[in-house]
Length: 309
Image (cartoon, rainbow, N blue to C red; front, side):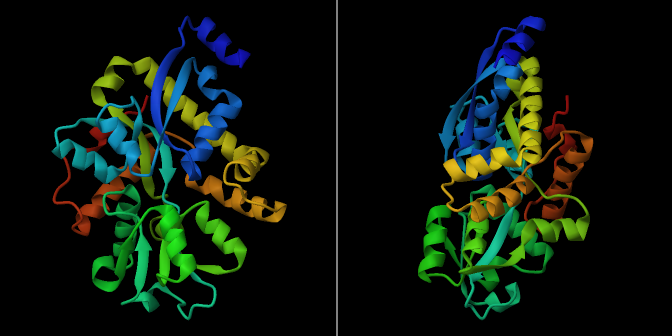
């Protein structure tokens, strides 16, 4: 902790409080956990006030100004602008880490076998649904036409899959890893791997976002926030023991083999740098969404949505 106060003193920066929405579980929960464990916000000269949120609420809490910082996906940036809300992504956040899961005993071998069957997925308004929808379009699949969709929260999706109420489910990390390790379920499609295989770049799922006026009025804080995120993600990448601690204490996974299995897969959710190359990946998502008719038009310069310090 002393290092953080040294930073603030050396650069003549008074630590200021920044409020930010975080999902307290999953990959975003790991981000929060590592920041708190290592006092990374203090290192960068500010105090982070974390506000818990459900998936999909990171965007809303920021839009209604309940917090300074939230998250937006590439398509949500366009949607917000259409509603006259000028949002900017100024730091990295997550790649898409959704898996299509089926019971181990299921006769389903590929996504093609699921046509006409019940599939659970996150609600339409979520970044999760948006990314899965686009990633499947790349594979030539339109979910609404080919599956019987059940919309639910992540805990309910897991319950539906476990109880047999659905034939398959799209689930993110670390839930998908837990199901795989149990031996009771199989992963028949990893969407992030498919995107990477086809295009050679990660899928840009969400970035750390705020109103343009907040970023303009707090450039030093925003720059340090971005650096904090990168530090946290690299600590996740480079410190498996810390990730295992999160899986053990927060995710409540039991058994050392299971903990190591889940912890090994979790870092794939994060973006470890913030530069023009990463912005290219985000804009590429917008371009593909336009190609498949998920948006009507691109803004004149979509790169204006992103700020790289």
